[in-house]
Length: 221
Ligand SMILES: Cc1ncc(C[n+]2csc(CCO)c2C)c(N)n1
Image 1 (cartoon, protein in one colour):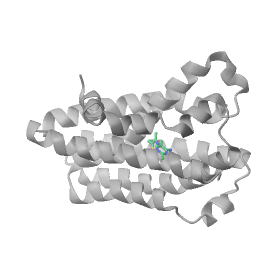
Image 2 (tube, rainbow, N blue to C red):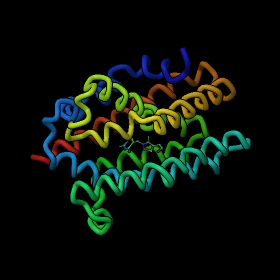
Image 3 (tube, rainbow, N blue to C red):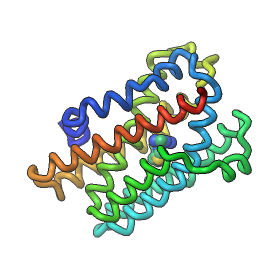
């Protein structure tokens, strides 16, 4: 078992709350209200800006070139890949760049992003990468699972672009590299005595991901 699987097992209830959330079930069967998805999209724009800062912080917290390059890959994945796709997706869902800029940050967005940033500021690089792991590795897992469950019907699915993005090769590769790097970092920096604290941190970040989905659902009520 790599460190990511160990963290998932140790924080199983939090992980399930995240990856088995109703938002995803409704997205999968196409019943997710459009207003829920739009609420999610607008907040995700603000989320991505803060996560870019978190990857920049990971560069600062790095002591080796390999760690700096891993952090840079995360930052580049947001700035050069995910953000462009996101803004285009928002446009197709009727959200202009001006709408995105004008949206006030929701509590769930503040809670999650500032929690991760604080893990990085008050802890070390391993704390920060463990806090980032549910996001980067989780979305690749969620995307792949939804795409596999929907199969060829994905072509005409209302949420095909979002699912296709995260199930696609580019994101699967980013997540695979992030997972490998996390494992190497843990092999270097983790003592077994630290594992329980890291699992608690991973569980908290997973819960905050679940709250982020819930914010989307609540936006449609
Ligand atoms: C709430 C929320 N959680 C995770 C992601 C996915 N994500 C954010 S940064 C990153 C790494 C590099 O792009 C990935 C995969 C998201 N968009 N929104």
